[in-house]
Image (cartoon, rainbow, N blue to C red; front, top):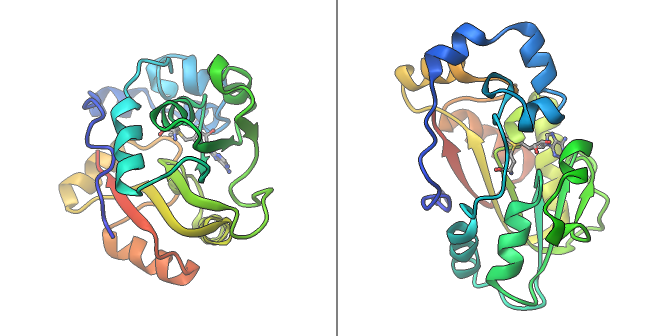
Length: 216
Ligand SMILES: C[S@@+](CC[C@H](N)C(=O)[O-])C[C@H]1O[C@@H](n2cnc3c(N)ncnc32)[C@H](O)[C@@H]1O
C-alpha cells in the first residue's frame, strides 16, 4: 500500500529552472557515476554536499514503529549511500540488525564512521544474499535509476531477498504540471511515470510491498 514514511524529512528546496539551465549531457553522465561529484560536488551534479544532519532520525523511528520491528530482525537498506539511515535505524532500535548496500564506491568509502561494518558495495540487480534473508527491505530513491528491464530485475531481487515487508520510494508524477517539473529536474532517473505505470511494473515483478512517490 502507499505509505508516506518520509513525512518527517525537511522539505528540499529545488530550483528547477536553475537545474534545467545548468543540465548538460556531461553533468548527467558525471552524476550517473554516483561518485564524489554526485554526492559532494556542486548542486547541479546532484546533492551539492551529502552530510549527516540527523534528518533521518524521525524517519527511522517511523519505520521501526510502522513495521513493528523488534531486536534481532534483519533490515536491508538498498542504495544506502553513506549509511545515514542505517545509522539512524540502528540507533532507533538497539539490537536491530541493519545492513546497507550501495553501488557507489565513493559513498561506501565515505560512509558514516558508525556504520563501517554495516554497509557494503553491491548492486540491487544482483543482491549477494540468499532468498528470504531480510524481515524488511528498504530502497529509497534508487529504483528509478534503471531502464524498464533492469528495474524489473531489481524489484524481483527485492522480492527474493525479503520475507514479506518492503518499502520503496520512487520518482513519479500525478499531473502534467508535475510531469513537466520532473522532466526539467531529472538527472539520473531513467524510469518514471504516473502511478499506473508503476503499478504495472510492480505487477510484472511480483512486488506487493509498500511504496510512495517522490514528486518534484
Ligand atoms: C538518490 S540516492 C538515494 C540515497 C539514499 N537512499 C537517500 O534516500 O538519501 C541513490 C542511491 O542509489 C545508489 N545506487 C544507484 N544504482 C544502484 C545500484 N544498481 N545498486 C545499488 N545502489 C545503487 C546510488 O549510489 C545512490 O547512493
